[in-house]
Structure formats: C-alpha cells, structure tokens
Amino acid sequence: MTEQSHKSNNPSLVDTNLRAAVWESLTLDPTIGVAIVTDEARTLWCNKRQAEIFGGDNATAELFNGRLWSTYFPQDWIEERLKLLAEVKATGKAIVLRTIWQGKQQFSQIRLIPDREDNEFQRFLVVTRRQPAGAHEVANQDVRMSEVAMLGELSSLTERELEVLALIGQGLTSKEIAALLHRSEKTIENHRYSLSKKLEGASAVALSAMAAQAGLTMDDSKRKRV
Amino acid sequence: MHVGDQNNEESDQFAVDSVVRSAAIDALSVDPTVSVSLMRDDGKILWGNLQAAKLWVGESATVEQYIGRNVHDLQPKEWDPVREKMFAAVRTSGKPVVLRLMWKGKQYFSLFRLLKGGMLERDRFLILTRHVPSSDPAHSPIDSGYEVIEADAVGLGHLDVLTPRELEVLALVGQGLSTREIAQTLSRSEKTVENHRYSMSRKLESSSPVRLAEIARQAGLTVKDAERQRVV
Image (tube, rainbow over all chains, first blue to last red):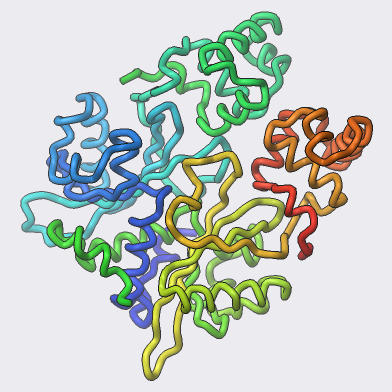
C-alpha cells in the first residue's frame, strides 16, 4: 500500500478540532519526541520528550527552541541530518532515520511541512520514538541507518561486547552467538561476564531485557561514536 | 474544554499552524508503532490508519476494510462495556484517559480523547493505541498524568493455552524472579512451581527462562491478569 492511500485528507473529517486533538496527542505523549526543525539546522520548537531525548531527563524545551544545532550537537551528526532534510525537501517524501542515541535504538520520521515556497527556510516535522528490538516492522517506510551512534551508558563497551549484546537482545543463546561469530562458547561467556560487570551486575534475564530494549544490531558496534 | 488550548499557548510563537498539524496527522497515519482510530460515539469508525486495521481486522487487512465499519463488529463483545466505560470516563473527567488492555497476548495502552460534537453532530473519540512491553519505563504512559483504567477482560492470544496458575508463574518469571522467589510469592512449594514452569515451557515450546521472560514482557503480564475474563 502506498502512503498516498492512507492519507487523511478527507475534508469532512479533518477539521480544526481533529487536527488540534492529534497534535495534542502527539506532543503531550511522554513517549514521543516531536520537533519542528528547519534546513538552516535549527530547532524551532520541540516538546518535553524531545528535549529529554536531546539533553537527558531534566532537559526542558527552552534549551533547544530557536537554537541552532551547532550549539549542542557534533558536526557529523548535523551534516547527516541536513543531507536527509535536503532529500525530503527535494522528493517531498518522508524518510525514517534509525539512530542509536543514548545507547538505545530510536526511529525518527522526517516529514516536509508544505510551506509556501518563498519562505527563507523550509520547516520539517520530526517525530521520534525509542523502539526495542524487533518491536515492529517498518513496512512501507523508507528507513535509513544513521552512521553516527551515541552510546550513552553503553560507551564503556568494546566493539566485541556490543556485538554480543546485540545478539543477546535478539534472543540468541551463548551457543548460537558463538556459532554466529565463529568464536568459542567460552569466549562468549567471558564477554557476557564483562558485560554484566560493566552494566552494573545485570543478571542473564536483566541483560537480555536490557539488550532487547536497546535494540542494537551487529552493525551498530562499528558505527562512528559521538 | 477546547482541545489543544494548552498546547496553543506555548506553540503559537513558533507558528504551530494548521499546516503543521496536518503534517502531524500524516505522520501518525503512516506510523507503524501507533494505531489511530477516530470513532463516533455509536462505534462507527470514521477514520483509522493501517496499524489500526491490522490490529482489529487482521494482519493482512487494508484501511478500506476498517474505515466505515462499526467497532461492535470488529472487537469481541466483552469489550463493549470496557469501551463504554472509557467513553464515560473521558466525558466525565474532561481529560484524556488511558486504557490498559491485552490483545493477542500483548500489552497495549490506548489513549482516548474526546472531540466534542455540536447540535448536529455526535461526539467523536480519537484513540491512539500502542504496544508497550512491561519493563519499558521509556514507554510507560503511567507517568503522563492521565488516569489509567485496566480492562477487566484480556485477549491472551497464544497464551490462551495456559491455566491461570501457569499465567501467574509466567508473570513472575517476566519480573525476573527465581523459582524459589515465585514459590514464596505465591505461597506454593518450589516443586509445584517447577511443575508449572515445565508444563508452561511445553505449551509455549520454549524452555529457556530468558525466552519465557521475553514472552511475559511482551505481554506485560501481571499476576492479576491470570484471573481476568478471557476474550477470544
């Protein structure tokens, strides 16, 4: 099914009330980050959750609203996003960007806000949420993988440990992980042990829940860390 | 109460105008993690996205098979009173209310929001539903400040093969408890709990405690769920 066919543009339904209700549902939802950004690398407006995603649990929207990204974010991160904004603007089609941010997988839908063409900048709506491993299929969506990763509490882990954590999160046993990575079970057990130690003595069940939450893939271990 | 007022205040300076809000509707309508339904208060589905169609009609459903139908024909009848209760709660409180439900063995949270009708049109409800695994504080709607109502019927899906006793044990396995701790919590012998674990593993074709914990986590299963009325 194409995106066009489930558009909402039924004039009898999409009235001001509905638009307001949807907007409120989105922006007051404690799990969904919403931002209006521009192609001059600026955040015009964001909700509380988006501020927390950007700046940690105590961050407020005021920290980011109206600010240029260069105030807070690494250059690699900014350039990757500007490229995507340019593409969304050129094609008019939404893109989903997958990023590891604060050690967890998140998906951002980047959508053009159809403004008049004589504006000095173009606005985009960015809707972001964390997703655990395999929580949903992203069918019908154009998903891009971010090449920069912000590992947060996982930044003490080595590449190998990240790989093992990714596979634990996908529900694999030590034996299966060993076979997949062409290593001995003993080596994998060692990685698990040091993972548990670095992640505050997590038990096997806790480690697996944590890994599932993070939603890592093997490729994430090799991405550029910011 | 006018929907959206609270947000207007802080957003207006940055021109959160109707164009932005329309984009928000488009963003939600293609989101694979949220099912969205606009329902009239007599149960007619006025609008919904693909996820809502998949959730209530079936995995291969299209939106055309969902929009225009009546919810009474799509959802188990045990949920009619639950929905009525939600409608009443939202109308009474004047604020959105959250419903916790289990469907096909997974835990979902639904946010019900009232769109008041007028002289000539009926009230409508905007309902956003998301799958929320239990041990996921980042996804918990509990701290959103909205009232949460728990559905008193559960759709257990593939977990329907389990007895109430086995469900209790599974819920506690999901919380990371050991057999001994489960035995203490439920005031049973370790041997009995072992037996439950064994028969549960056979029924769910999975003996690994880690996988069982994952199943329980997806279901957001609590001990209370074991005794709730089951819907099919």
